[in-house]
Amino acid sequence: MRISFRESAAVLGVSIIVLLSVIFGAKAEPHLAILSSLIFVVAYAAFRGFEYEQLEQHMINGIREAIKPILIMLLVGMTIAVWMMSGAVPTLLHYGLETLSATWFAPSALIITMIVSTFTGSSFTTIGTVGVALMGIAVALGVDPALAAGAIISGACFGDKMSPLSDTTNFAPGIVNVSVFDHIRFMMGTTVPAITITFILFFIFGQGNGAIDSQTIGSTQQELARLFNLSPWTLLSPLLVMILALRKTPVVPTLIAGVMSGLLLTGLTQGNWNIGQWMSVIQNGLKIETDNNTVASIVSKGGLQSMMWSVSLVMLALAFGGVLRGIGVIDVIIEKTVSKLKRDGSIISSAALASIGVNFMAGEQYLSILLPGQAFKKIFEDRSIDPRFLSRALEDGGTLVNPLIPWGVSGAFFASTLGVPVTAYVPFAFFLLLSPFFTFVFAFTRPTKKVAENLVA
Image 1 (spheres, rainbow, N blue to C red):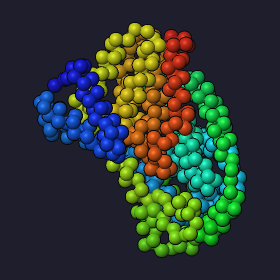
Image 2: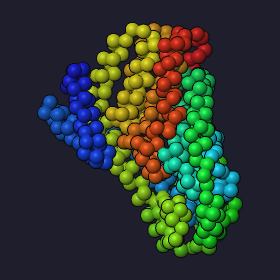
Image 3: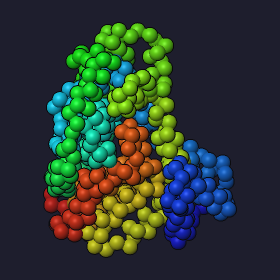
């Protein structure tokens, strides 16, 4: 059974109306918005003759796409809790408060996370480790949390886009048969102006955050020193994770190593060998009793349960996307769009828009790369358009837009990990907003034809 383009557009349109009405009209959590749209689509599909068992399987197939990200989310939550308990994050906070200032925090955080994510190839690992420490420093320095999150996420996603170790950086060119290093070089066209403007904007915005209460900073450092044995030895666990990431060890065993080494250092550096307490912290996060509200807000984080908000949202979003894809809504709309395109610039722009659209519909960046990549690959070949335009459009519209969507896998994870809602940090996620913008601009202002056969791997 296949539904028509008009029917697909109508289903998608009503789904979006329901979604936005629940979020902005009823001011409900995005979970309920996604669930409402899911109920509508399933009901309509059943009315059109689709068997419920078939629709249920589509939901399961959609959720199956998130099994690995969900495991990573849970492990990151556990890692954060253990690194708090072992003193690793408090040590980073203590030293960071001595070296970073509120005035220079945003550009500094941008550069730090750019470097870390480029070497690790993972925005998730960067946000869950260095990002958490930087957010703690931002809170202590009195930096706007939304601004701080925007800088941290911009830097982390730079590496996720440009590092040859990143899975999406290899996935996007792989879909269209482009060498990963050709893909990275070509992405410089949108990345360099985007990251340059981003740095300038953070430099400007950061200038307004220079008033620091040195007494508050001092009391925060003293309280951290009272609660934890601060030592460079506590940083061995984060260092191990970085080394394993550089050696391209899969992320799940890398994070498990981070948890286990963190527990060992908890005993060795903090003198805490209480296994029952370890298990409680891993499950529920670290809970510190202190009169210093700044310290309490910084270190009382992490734990498996802290990620359940994100996990439940991701599961609902991907179940919704699975049904839309299963009944043909996404494929029909993309195919119809592709068939109407004439100009090269329009084709490239539509590929980026399709990637953004799948992100909004399914909340999953891999699908936002895979589906448009498969749909547009043939037309790029037929029109002799340089395939690197397609791989770049998929990266800019897929990898970088997902963190801007509250129900996206990355958006939900970043919001939970940093403690800042997606809607709050979006205005400051300059790099994520500018890269797709330059993709659209250059689609119409740069030569688009394939210039050399050796560009294709």
